[in-house]
Image (cartoon, helix red, strand yellow):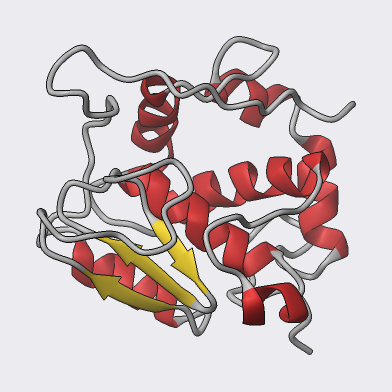
Length: 183
């Protein structure tokens, strides 16, 4: 299996200029998200809906990263929060210590980030993998098989191998709840 085309376009829904997504970082989702991120040692900074989001690569309301902290607000899509958190999980310790806004990395790491965010969605009550993949598609993630689900199930073997190779998932593809470079 080759590297998936994980290019992301900045498609926005016509209403209010917001990205399309059903699931947002509302107070109902925040405790589970905070608990999940805490298992990786990632901090969560929650800002007010009209507040500035530090480290947002795509612009507000998309999640931001600054060193080991994920920045969200109530209108931040959960898929965005998980994606940026997965960048923090997948990058090496030196990059993680100094990251601000742009996660960097290569195409294969980006694919691994996308696969990991789907896996982590299965650990968020009320969201799950299928709903997250639908939100990713609605936002504009672009995979050569036409959908996040098709890519995840049929063409993400290279991303899975990358995650296994860095000890982030086990041989069965289960999340190990550690960041890259942790013993």
